[in-house]
Length: 317
Image (cartoon, rainbow, N blue to C red; front, side, top):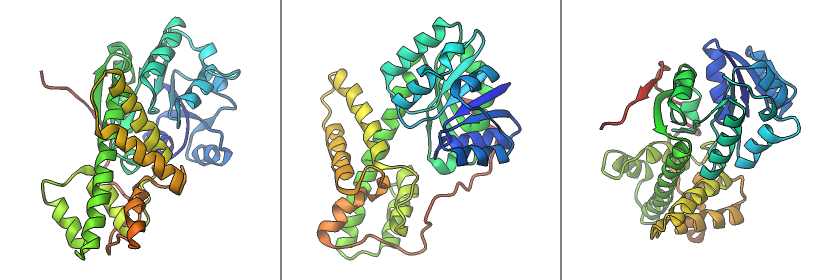
């Protein structure tokens, strides 16, 4: 199978790297020529446009920062949608809006091709080793066609159902992640303010009912001081905003969701949209004139799980 990959950023580049590392035939496309050159040096081919890429491959994968970016590479003057053909699949791995997934899926199906939405979850460090989780929404036939590719890029693969379901579940998990990030920022700052040792505080949370994936990853880069989790405040705002939109449309009387949206919008205004998301802790540090730091924590996260073939996760019924 010939694979085209558009979007070589923080997540997309790592997913494309897993495909190349495992011997897949990959053609890449990105606006950053230096990134394209890097992946060509690893063994990929390159394409001059999304259209040229689409003409050369069986499976088109996009991993881009916004719904608008995905629409542009598909529907633009040199987009690939115009040349999609029966039997071809577009696998959208961006975190995008439910309504946009439905709209684009209909356009792909009108050309006789197949569309799958496959957002990822688990952090850039796991994307780098092929151990990230992948949610896959779309027809079962398309899922089975792309499953060998998905199990190369990810460890745990969940077929979520019809188109749109994966996007809805992905923004829900990002919302939960963000709620705990804010809670951890408050908790760590409070412990620092009352004079507790931060390394001991980290371990107290880690071995207790307060623990979470977010604590074991993002708290470490907070306590290091790098705050580098390869994810920025504008992307958090986008994701929690998408969740809040879903909840409001369903008339759920949410209380935390609007508050989290507000906190990160204010974070963007105060620290800049491209500030690392764990630096939301500055909201609590700066009024007290303190810095929440420990010792011996890593500047960035590295996945210590060995790379292994992925598998489908089947929900209990």
